[in-house]
Length: 395
Image (cartoon, rainbow, N blue to C red; front, top):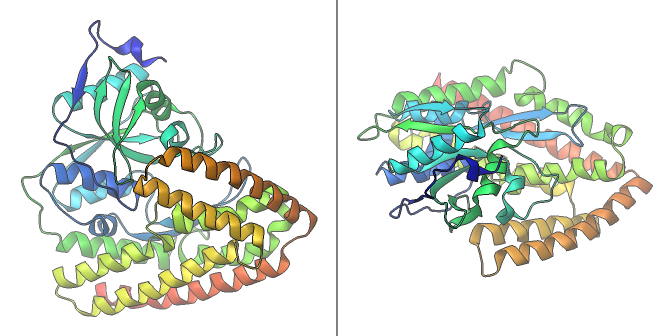
């Protein structure tokens, strides 16, 4: 649908001029922090992340997927967002509609009322992200704080240090995408804000228990610590299931989902370590600082896992890793001519991707996969000891 069909006869310009977004590490914690800050409710991104359940793990593969998904955060869908709001004394309602017109009108009405809006989008349809066409992910969150129908422009805040503009038509495509597995369905979050942040102690304890339970006693074997073990078992078998570009996708996804896809690096473990350090003070439990340090070691091992997937021993895979890191830095900092620089990196990445796929098609990377498997198991052992200590403290 062309969003112009849903506009009034007289085009509107509605912009929340005093909304001052700041960048962040993870999409939903950045978006939530931005709207909370606007209402004078200031919490760290790490505290919001921890209150939402914190870290997790899932190894997920279905036949329609070109490569497995490696998830390193707790929670399903929008649960972490809603839970976090409740734990700080707010209430959140998720609004979802199959009507593009209604979705746009809901968005405009909130902005008219002076509310910057947390919305879900398919990031592949946001040109400023400079993503390949196939990189569809509808679980991404941004804040929309203005629309100018005369110019056909929307004003958005993302993880970057500066806000963005996008066409209203691109925003509509991003909100109405049908691509699996996370179609955004025009979702937005309506929040009833408290006058002040409530007592966080119960919410912190509850969220830590959820995290420990999900990791230590997961409901299925591809989640939590059991999922980490399953992943390590499956890694050496990848060449039998995936070839060429698809095998490269397996390796690239490991690096992407751990280091540069809005995790704050190291599969969210750095963020969780900082959350526990804050929690130690709020709960008056200094022993949580020890667990925070243990998660910093876990973070180091997660980064080793990511590097093992695109190692220095392969010049082609190393180049893919380094270019991907550079592209993410440009996006987050929004350097001058950021979009053009990201597009140039995309061209170089395409060349190295084709070369790496050909190399992997010719010869299976047996030694690389064995090293990756060993590194995952080291990570598993560290996390098991860390989570068992955390669970004992918070019981």
